[in-house]
Amino acid sequence: MAPATVAAPAPKYTTTGTVSSPLDLESFASAKGEHETVRLTSAKGSQIRPKPKVTLTSLTVNNSGTLRKLNSVVIPIVYSDKFYKDVLDPSLDDINKIVYYADIPVGAICCRFDNQASTSKEKPPTLIILTLAVLAPYRSQSLGSALLLSALKASLHPAPPPPPLNDAKAGNKAPAPVTLKPRKPVNRAMAHVQVGNEDAKRFYERLGFKETEVVKDYYSKMQPRDAILMVCEDIRAALGEQANGDT
Ligand SMILES: CC(C)(COP(=O)(O)OP(=O)(O)OC[C@H]1O[C@@H](n2cnc3c(N)ncnc32)[C@H](O)[C@@H]1OP(=O)(O)O)[C@@H](O)C(=O)NCCC(=O)NCCS
Image (cartoon, protein in one colour):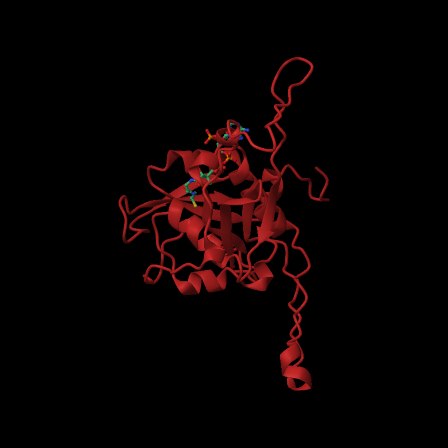
């Protein structure tokens, strides 16, 4: 995760940005009324548990409050309004996502690109993972991997950028909407992990990242202040893809 560059006042939330607590459906089982709870059991006697629907959703101004809430619950850093404005950049539409588990927002990834147009070996184009967060009760179900792998895939295989919206209210006087240029594929990624956060370090290693260096005093407002720089030099290999895109 990246440090906050500018300390911002605590964000205010409207009801649209509120994340509900997960519901314990079992607790409703004793409530008798017009309907009774039906317990589904397989032929072998085991309980049938339907797989929850898991979806990734792009960031918009409408779910920006949800993203803030997720980050503030999981990550001990207050990110600025500028951070939340920058991650809405439409050119990152296929990268920055919120994960919904049974329609509940439970995690999110925010990234940006560095040196996107660079051809130098010293400063190669790189996907920078700024925040990756999954609410604690929903961890170890591969939701974090789903977010990260989706961003890595999109970095290597950029989706066509979303079409511009016409401002209907401005009528004919509106300037012609600017069409975004497609991104070039980026095959390198990096993330900072706070020293001592072994879970996150193992998580990145499992997905092809390697520890490269310790960045001293990376975090100014929390202890420990140092960060481990985790780098994935070859996203294609990490995804198990060959150069022609085959897996
Ligand atoms: C790091 C983080 C995003 C991982 O999220 P997650 O949803 O738990 O990730 P995954 O489930 O994909 O993988 C995590 C672990 O669960 C295990 N796992 C994955 N699928 C599993 C499954 N179906 N059943 C059991 N375990 C599973 C993995 O082996 C992994 O274990 P490991 O750490 O020993 O390697 C989450 O722990 C988090 O939000 N941490 C706090 C914020 C943070 O540190 N962010 C990273 C720095 S930006």
